[in-house]
Length: 399
View 1 (cartoon, one colour):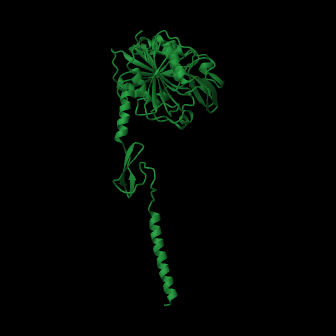
View 2 (cartoon, rainbow, N blue to C red):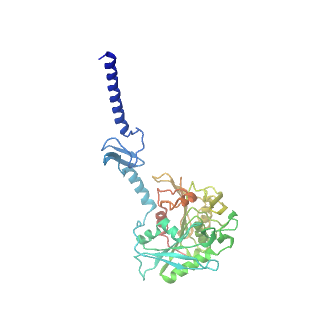
View 3 (cartoon, helix red, strand yellow):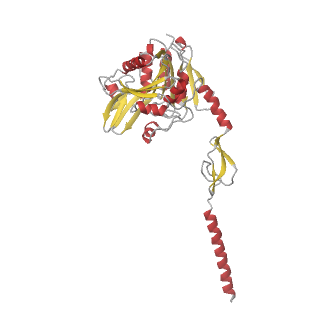
């Protein structure tokens, strides 16, 4: 055998060995040194741990692969969350599974014969004990069951023994969908487009809430000193309007993502208020201005005041100090609470600013892609429903 043949055979064996080794390496998943740690992604060695986004992950064997497990909240993050929760959710019982009764009750008006409300009565309800009442108002294009699902108030009602009702605003048919809205404020709030029918027709929604309280009170024993309102967006506007114009029947109001749409507020009696808002809310801008809503053929523009100016009106109406205190002593540095001291009859007027929060209800997952498109992704580091009930639950009408 010639030297050249022997050399060629030697080089062929080297190539075969190289290809075999290359094939082996190509079959092994490569894990970049800086790969993001998340549940289910590949890791290098069983038993090692890594911390990311306040969670500690452990590398485990799953089948023939090594992957990161679901992770556990790190002790420091858990302690931080726990410390804030003690302040924000003080005095309430956490949500539990519902065991009570959900009913739909007609409450028509001349303008809308199909108006109704849904009511949840907890299983702990007793016939001879007066129950607190929470009235929850949906936003523009929302409805009773949508807000119910979005907020989880039924679960809080079950745990804390109160009745919650979800009334429907005035309906209008636009194309293939129905739109419901509230007359939350002054003429001129909506500046162009297909303005909400409740405002165009000057629907008396303050009177409708009074009628609702009467209807519920005729069915159940309600504690008239503990009647509360909450609302989202357009529902938030009406809740604050009711605090100004039906104050003799309302104890306290706590709302999300909506300003007071009145030039002035002159309540007959003092009403506590908490207004929760996000700095990334484009539909209820922190600094006010013109916002636009558009979905399908439904489109309009409206004006809003700066959020703090809106709350300051409510503070002045309740005889509070013109100067507010500022509390950002939370481990969650996104939160700041402003409070106006010295209010009449011991009421409390506060606002909670959340850095990075959108128009969506905080602490509860988005209900659909459309809701994200309209309101943004929900801020998930606090639960607005628990904050609201913690604020309302200890308020009792003094006048």
